[in-house]
Image (tube, rainbow, N blue to C red; front, side, top):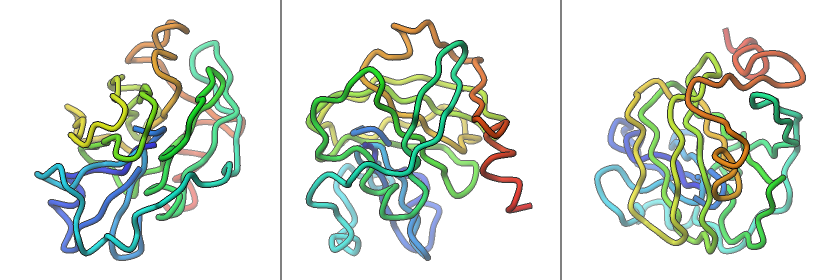
Length: 191
């Protein structure tokens, strides 16, 4: 539900977008999801990526159990460029148990927006160690990006709006998977 980050677009030779829970990687172009991350420095999408823009909700993605404090979520995994770009766009009726975990291509200053996201969501910006750095409200259909304060964000977890507050999850909480830490689960093979 979040189209990935604007800073990625500003720092990449090719501009890109993304999507994290309706908020929000492409081969040479990087895309991150949420609902739609905005274009670096601008709230309008990059016209060169127009053909990449999703026009409908994607089917439910592969899931994995993740542990957020005392809570367990069966979270969808946005791993490919198209999955990341689409995120939770166009989804309606987001339930308390719905979530999507985005794997960003490298640590960065994340920026998610809510283009084509009819429902507001909450998004946790998470560092490489799996620690929640920040939690943000992402307003439905808002094309202004929500930037992270940290430039060390490697994962984003989108949930129903207010989920973190309702479940007493705060910055500093660590996220694990059924296979161990986020780094061990998703980054170990890359090293």
